[in-house]
Image 1: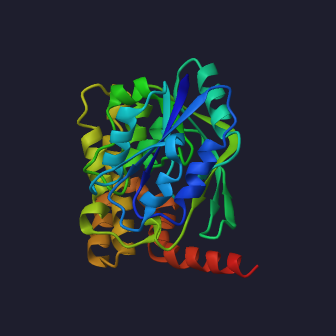
Image 2: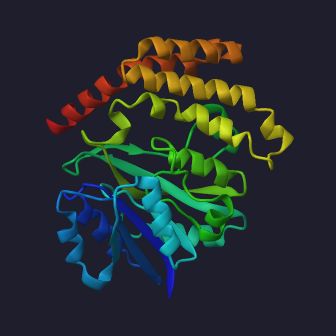
Length: 306
């Protein structure tokens, strides 16, 4: 009987998808794991790879609609009580599904579970170990932090309650989703490495983005606080949370060379919450806005030659 369903959305990742699929199929569990691959209109020949798996996976190819739409469609097909996803360029570590499944089932109030992971390059070389933080709902709002990473699992019933990924959000759909999940239950962290998160030149995380996508943090926070069922304690965080969203938005604009807009977002963030001026994190975030891509590429280059 299927207990866990993993959805793998794919768009032109033929070089990595086999490793992703195999990492799920090779999991040793005392229950069945379902693998659902949704091709989002790839043009790089990935279908020929998927066809080699015959009946070991379910896959379907559709016209390009984006990652969120692919995930929502895949999860609508899922048979498991517990579901999750894996990016087509990432991979699970051996035994991770069993560990995550056991932890969430033994918890009294957890709606999701996640662990630590390794960041790797396009050649599978480890760049660094990532130790995630325990999920703190207030900090998620105040700092726009989203600890759950690759390999996270969650109850399908909780997913149905909060709704799927917002298909209008392209850059931060996971953050928006985990905020809504965190509002109804606990997001549980286990002290285990569960996945490999691949960083390469095509990764969304390090490229320049459009104006609309850089504004997504602001839209997410605004939409979240428009929800009816928020406790007064959480609702009172609205101004500080909005200020943090503006800082992140400014960071994204700066990375995309829209410096005038970036400084406008930074200025408005300080006006809404003047305490940001004395927070070290504000300084770090602004500096990071201008130097992260350079620093990351330097780190990758050093790792390649060591």
